[in-house]
Length: 406
Image (cartoon, rainbow, N blue to C red; front, side, top):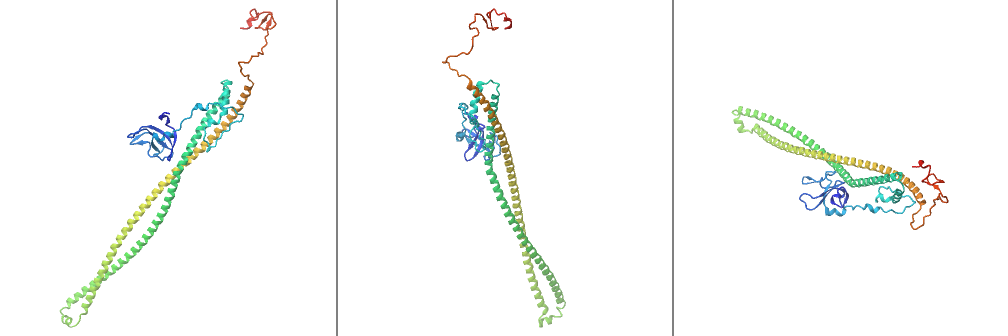
């Protein structure tokens, strides 16, 4: 068989799957002969192109595969000899029954009708060309061929369906895993949001308390400053008058001023600590916002990925429904063809039985046996006999009725 004659054949590649040969020849920058296969399951490595050049068309974006000819040469099915099935087996009175089991079909249908072939060949020799039996036989052969094609198509579709079933199961497993991860992340995100919300409320309440304390401290500082200024003015006014008194007796105003100064310093320290707490809270607030944004972005990515998985799953279910519908249509067609084949087989057998009964009455030719003639010589015992008018008294040459025969 020529290599190019193998284009279009369906082969089974070990550990890969079934596919159709669509290219045989050389490939750029590669040595030897390569075979381009379109895998039915779409589990290839390319789309029929190599380094920007297209060698064959594929059914899916990743269903093409290049393999060296030497590795798959033994996988090419050898065509059977069409003359090998021309031997006529002995006729049998029992009609052949056609097994139309879809899953148990493994043998060619043409070997299931040996009796019909043998009887048809005998009837073609005996009967004329316009016998309806010959038309029935040709229709039967055409239906058998069509039935074989439909069964092959159904078998290929069944194999493709079984091959994509693994991909469907894998997608469903990934979808379930993604659903679980989504639920887990959603729960984690809700927990994080709740925790952040609590922390935010706590920090806001603490911030409000710190602001209240700062405002109170500021008002107290202002009040103490006003008191200190008033005391200083009083000291300036009474400095000359009270110099002697200040020298002899302890000054209660000086003690009050020192106490106020200490209070002012303490309030300033509280204010500084409050500012530090406010800056720290602002930093923590920014970190919480950033983390919340990152979690929202991650949740959005997971939602997008989940949508893609759902779309792929929907496409796979649509494809599975289409294949099931095609399989049902093919099964119905096969049932109709089988019923027609059975009817034609019964009709063919009835006609063949009639021909066999006629064949049994025909004499067998035996060149060694003597021929016994059953013909009667009408001119025997007569001197004059005319074979034209079948009367005696004259010969055929002198027949007066010669004008009636020409």
